[in-house]
Image (cartoon, rainbow, N blue to C red; front, side, top):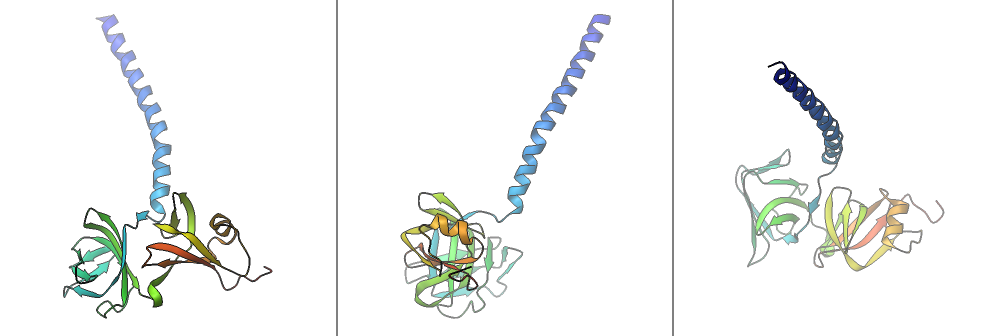
Length: 201
């Protein structure tokens, strides 16, 4: 009995040591994950298009990043995007019921809308977005708002100071820039440095 009792005690000690080691290993990883979550959530933009007309329900709103009510975004005569209650999203387009006033960007799962953003339409199918934050390769970049979008084969660098590549532009100007997406081409076509940047500073 004495030997059996002693063996169980040692086993309990071993289990406690193993548990402490596991917690020590896991907790730093959790902190790292928390740091990632605290930043802008990454959203792969699978679809973008001008909205011909948005048909919202009477109670439609986007509150705290979640849709209340529902809306149909009529893209053209053949395509309508259904935005249902509880969908994640954002809306910076103030005239949502005005014809051709908004552009929709969406992260899709099949044909279902996982997440969307409505932004104001600009002239010539262009939309101005936040700066490019990182180059992901394979023609993909991530903007500072977390959006992952494709670049055109040739990107215009609109700045008094010359840069030879998108990577150099991002490294040099970083947050002091904006990004232009041509919605018709579904690509980033230009980047612009801040107006405060001159040829000498």
